[in-house]
Length: 71
Image (tube, rainbow, N blue to C red):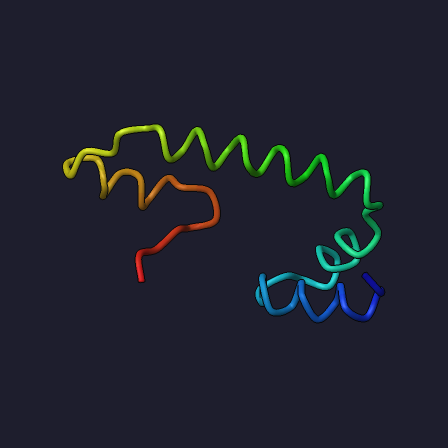
């Protein structure tokens, strides 16, 4: 992937990135991206395996990193 392609994809996937965050992600090597992907898959698996009861939704919405909101 070219650096220009990476910028386009990052902006499309995560439009709210700051300039510093974009710079950090652009500088990652392919090997480091593999580590990021592995960790993201692990976190997603953990989240998907966790039962979320209806009574817990308001608490999760207020404490979830990044201020998650349902769409």
